[in-house]
Image (cartoon, rainbow, N blue to C red; front, side, top):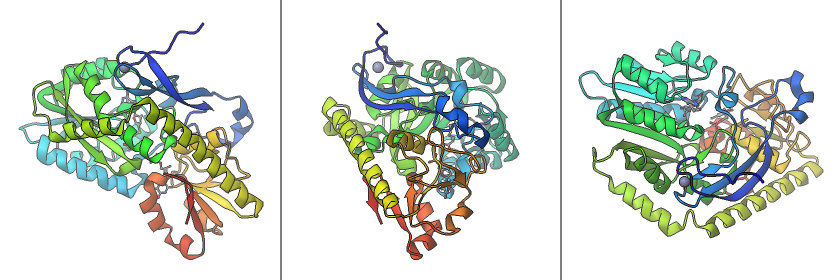
Length: 411
Ligand code: SAH
Ligand code: TMP
Ligand code: ZN
């Protein structure tokens, strides 16, 4: 008999509520010469559970961190102008609100290509990016930021503390939820943070995932799905306190959390408000989770039915945005090149490769208009406004977009 899975935060019992089947890694885009090996390549069971004790939503099985994050990791944060503006704005806020002492210091986990820290570097403020993926760490350096090419953990935190002193801000965007060893991370941050400092992180919000049935937010790198309640409980275990929250429109709906040393800062009314809202919505009630899982199955069936209809009518459908999210969608629904002939994506590192598990070719955005397809499946739905504006000529030429969040819709 296998051991029952337990919560990685508190050791409580896990209750599974969704199984998306065997899945490849979200960002494991396949080089064309490896296509014949893909049927036998790595898969893991992508299943999600909630902890019955602390309510943390989390993957049951997960992939080792060095399998996901390595020198050839293809994700480049700066591919979206909306995200560039988002992080420039946030960096401005850090500079005016938090990094105001005599010699302030900020550490970012998952600094990627320097999308946030380049603004801090330009302002001449002491900073350190922590980025374990070698190629993108190098891109960050070329964008003028100081980077250590390692995984952040308790040991690295101690070395940063010895070399650079305490941090006024520790920041992590779309990174904290990607790490299975949060215990070491939180102990490291507790030691590294200045007495009045803050740890700020932003990740997909579980409330938005449930509300939009956006199950493609679930893939290997997204190990935890936070709520105000589960973060408050987790922080308290490490002598930290949730002092502020903000709901963000980016990446399909995210939660920004601000943690401080317990008692060091007043708790914002926004925390109480969001906790109340989650309670009223019954966000982690088993009835809500069951409804969510039923909605996922229905959405998947509807999407495949529409794509088959279009194929049978002889229409040409291409995908837009080879996101890690779409790996879950395509594999769960069994969408292969007979339904979506190729996917265009602006990331050079993804072009010329094939989607993990489903082997749909990835091409550059120029291929989109050459000639336009009849329909485009918007896989990068979290960048909808930016992409629809950029590709306005497609719609004007008679092309139609297929959306699937929060439900399947063609317009
Ligand atoms: N912050 C960027 C990048 C998110 S992608 C953005 O919001 O767009 C996630 C990043 O986290 C990757 O670049 C990955 O290399 C990094 N990462 C993963 N585990 C990490 C760890 N333990 N410490 C620091 N960075 C980590
Ligand atoms: P993300 O959802 O993880 O941010 O990934 C978005 C993907 O979509 C990324 O591979 C880049 C791609 N993309 C485009 O191809 N064109 C665009 O205009 C935008 C915003 C993203
Ligand atoms: Zn727990």
